[in-house]
Image (cartoon, rainbow, N blue to C red; front, top):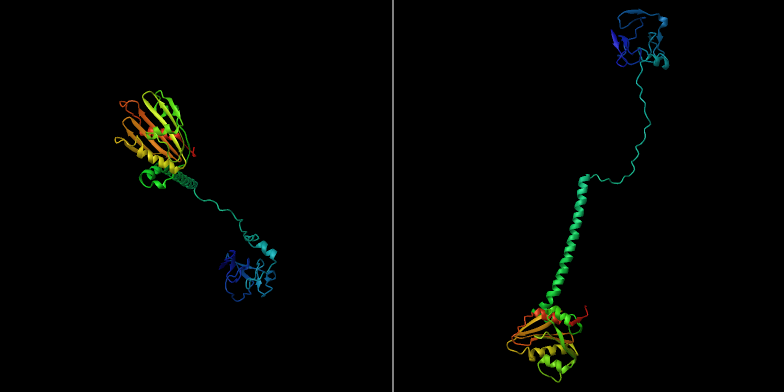
Length: 331
């Protein structure tokens, strides 16, 4: 019976305990067989001379001449070089020197976001910034428009409707009579020409109050310029008062005692010119407006030479002529 070595596959006799080729244990140790006759895998007996047998230096067991290891104890019978030449080539395993893993160098964070989504996020951010800028611009525009409207409407509101004392108009720097070019621009070019220019106070009083007054409290000086187109007469008048209160008192006196305001058939209006209240009276062939620009009393008088001529000039045209006479510190 043949025992094949589980390690190298070499056929050994049944009584062998170790593979004679590689020394691998085959079975448990049986009693030593001292017979010089050994059986091989071809089941034929072969006679071996006792002198050619190899005795194990460890246990003294006799082994066949070609044995590399003792069949009883597995002790090597030949030198390692001889056994290596006879043993089958075993796979060699080479081991490389193990090195400790080195920590990778620190790297900056990399944007792993998808390029399309990244571009979309950038676009969204830009849109948000644009919306914020547009909102700021809209707010600034709204505030500017609101302030502009208030600057135009608020004077009328305070001066006419609610609380006149709360509104303080810009102070007038000076006044002057308008010229024929301004008259042509406002009332239309109708062949206007100057026919009067005086600073005589009694003459001015006659046109302002409708009669001669020897003395008016607070008046320092005055001026009157008259224009005509042969049918209509236009007068530009101002009085320089000592104080603003004196100018206000003179305006109140004109409204109460003036010829053009005392008529029972006169329609009366009020408007604002540069923040100052202008009192307008209209009746038949007369259109007159009067106000106080700071220390100055300003008056524009328009009347026709014949009752049959109707004055079709508007209140806004009269207010424009009065505005042309004022010079403020904002100009």
